[in-house]
Structures are given as C-alpha cells and as structure tokens.
Length: 229
Image 1: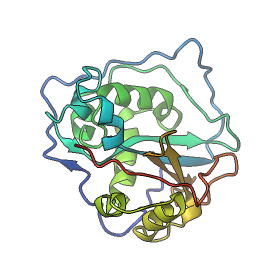
Image 2 (image 1 turned 90 degrees about the horizontal axis):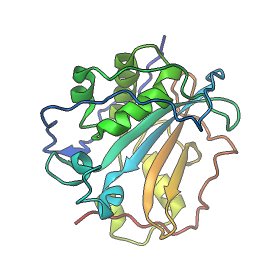
Image 3 (image 1 turned 135 degrees about the vertical axis):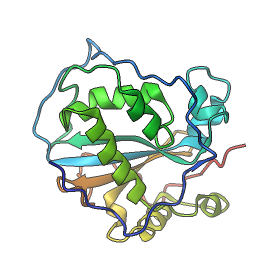
Image 4 (image 1 turned 90 degrees about the vertical axis):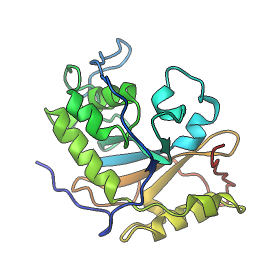
C-alpha cells in the first residue's frame, strides 16, 4: 500500500535523550469533534510535521497535561513527530475518515520516544491516520520510518548565532540528500521562535516543492531557537 522512500540513506541523529516510556501508558480513542467535518477527499501528497519540543515545553514544564513530554521525567526531547498528514490539491485536506478505538498498548509504547504524548497519538491517528490506512500499526510504522529517515542540522550551533528563516531552511536541506529549501515550511511564533518544521512530500513520499497555499516565512525573517533550560 505504501512506497516507503527514505529522505536520506543514513539514520537520524537521536532526538530523544534517556527516553523511557512510563508504565501504564494508554491512548483512549478520540471522537471526532462535532465542529469538524469528515472529509474523505483523495490523498495526493503528504506533510511530515516536526515540532521543536524545547519551545513547546518552554512554558509547560509543570503542566500535568504535558507531563510526559515536558517534565523531563520520561526523557528530554529535541524534534518530535507532530504527525504525518495526508493532503489533497488545495486546503481541504482529508480528515477523520473513520471512527477509532483505543490504540493498542504496544503501538503506544513503541512510538512514545518519537511522539511523547498519548493524547497526540490518539489525535493524529483519528484525524489523519484513518485517511491513510485501516490499522494504527501501519500508520505509526510508516510515520516512524519517515521520521527516522530525517537528518537534523546542529540545532545547538544554529541557536547561538543570528539566523533567518532562509538560512535555517538552507541548513535543514543541506543535512538531507534530495531536500531543497522550497520543500520546507517553518512555523514561527509571534515572538520569533521556531515552533515547527513541515516537510512537503509527494504521494510516493519523496520530498517535493511545497504548494503555494502553504505560506512560507520570508527568507529574511529572523528566527530564534530555544535550547531549553
């Protein structure tokens, strides 16, 4: 069903440190919100969304809701997988294609160090994964292959010098064979801090130029990287 093509020939640098799934993890089924439509539009491409965890956790270290990701008790995280999203031609992407059940514990434990939030696992499977496959095991296996194939630039070095969005895209692309800067989109918050990197992928999972409707941060836009602490 899936043509699994790596973004690079070598494995990714570790993005989680001393990560160990806590005991008793569970991910109950997420119901489709009444305000969200069910869309089963044809899948023509994908987005691999990678969140920069230090920025997300900056104000959430004491949050019970985000304990597994942000407290430091279960690991220290760099980039984590936000999700692998099926897209279509235009902004009306497919979503909530089928009802879901609770995720199997084996799936939750196997993918925790990539996505250290069971709430997010349940959400990503319900909203996006159901539009790609019938089995959560397949969705997370494909997601893990794609995530593990990405090589990340030296974020510590980049965080210690003046940086623009264009320079960051260039550095990220240079770390991955076959990736070009226009195949990336950055999410930067109002204070100028990097939140997320989105990789645009074709239907065969090869990197491709991002569509015009995905707005890009201008190359000269300043961007800062929070290292944590």
